[in-house]
Amino acid sequence: MKITGFLIVEMGFDRERFLGDVNEGLLCCICRDVLEDPVQAPCEHAYCRQCIEGWLVNETRCPEDRKNLSLSSLKPLFRYMKNDLDNLQIRCINVNLGCSHICSLEFLASHESECQLASVECPNDNCHAKVQRNDLADHMASCEFRVRECPKGCGLLLLERTDKDHNCIAELKTAIEILRSETSCKIEEQKREMELRLNTQRGHMVQKESFMQAQVDELKSEVSKLSQKIKLLMELEVKRREDTERLELEKRELMELLRRNQTDGSTSASVGKRPVIKKVTML
Image (cartoon, rainbow, N blue to C red):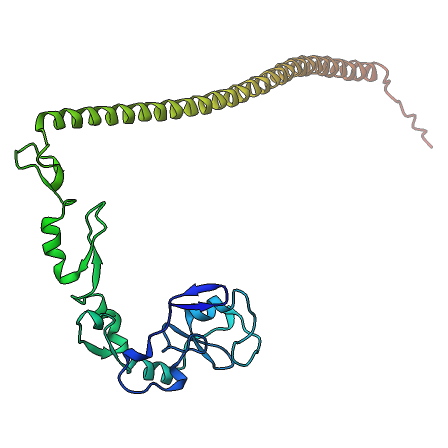
């Protein structure tokens, strides 16, 4: 565990775990342990990610050369340095518990996630016991918090320590009551949800009905206006026909009058003519 500024972080691999000497370039500039989850500054100084992130909470400069530094300027470690780091030979973290495994740093996480000497918590609820991974199966077989099906046939899951006090009928009644209560709550919840949906739909329908009624009223007004226009046009059409018939009648009367005038004129011209007698003088 390392103290960085005002933050306490757990980062960096203890140098004592490695076989042989470790190059200084592979040590964190802050915690001075072997780099874990390494990042690099533009000035090429390397740090454990948590170490430098904790440092930059209160600082804005590199802890080595005091050059300006920010989280956004951090970048991955150079490839050749990363390869050298991954190839370091390291002992398992459980070496004090008897694990003698040694591997490349690159494969350490894979081993430690399966190491049989690692301390793990019991997965049973309310059990806070920690045992080695290779002893976990034996612990779970006798854990008082383990759960198993009732051996009497009621089908309920029981804690090991409550098995002796278990009453199938009483437990089943309790389970039925709980189920009935949960079902009732779900029904009420679904009922409220349905009522809410119905009210929402009802509100939408009222709005839609109001909108459609407004459209119907508008259409009625338009139809009324069109009916008045049609009535006016029909009256104009009737008047036009009457005027046309009157004009046709006047036209016929005028044509008849003209015809009569022409006939009377021809007769007067015939009556007014006299024969002309030419006198021939004989010489």
